[in-house]
Length: 259
Image 1 (cartoon, rainbow, N blue to C red):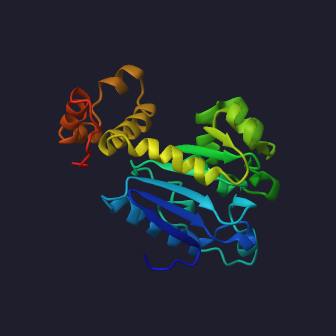
Image 2: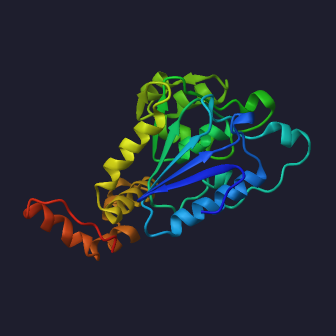
Image 3: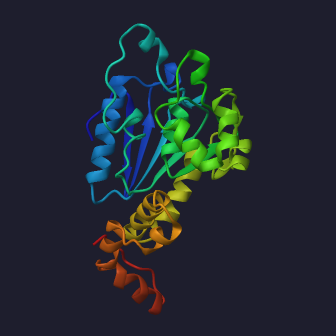
């Protein structure tokens, strides 16, 4: 792949690993970084050979400190792409799974990146917060909306209205962290979760993700269950829909063709 200025991209088989690469500012992001990352995720979404992605941060201190406030204070803030902060927070049409490997500070937009992912793996030194009100801002890249949907209104408001910092263990107890691992092991653990996902049918995984998100927006549970979502239909019409049961009956590993 071509070199990137604000991130590194490594494709390992079906897995893409994107590392936010501004460690000198704790991987804080600005408009140029958002635009670059938007293209990286566009490529991931369009590539049929890539099935799962991990996003993490360079260096041992931070996943991402969020918005680069120094750039904003200098009046140099540019537009955010339609796909949102880091090219992810308003990317609602991506059915491929995303895993956040949080290796340190995840604050503001950094926390919002993690919340936009499907799984959050946190090192013991990870710290999460939405401190925007402390600097006169609002966590508008999804934080004020995703967090209450994930952990409930009262617990979310306890973080949002105070900007308080939450460690990895509390994040797991609250419900927005899937696993806590020793410092320095977030990426390795995220790869382990990715490997489990990659054992599954990619079409079934994408259909499942779409069903979860679209179903949560349905007015009633009855309507959610009764709806056949597009990825679900695509999965039913696929070769892999036959291959999975056949492999089970023949007591062998399925050979997913993603079609």
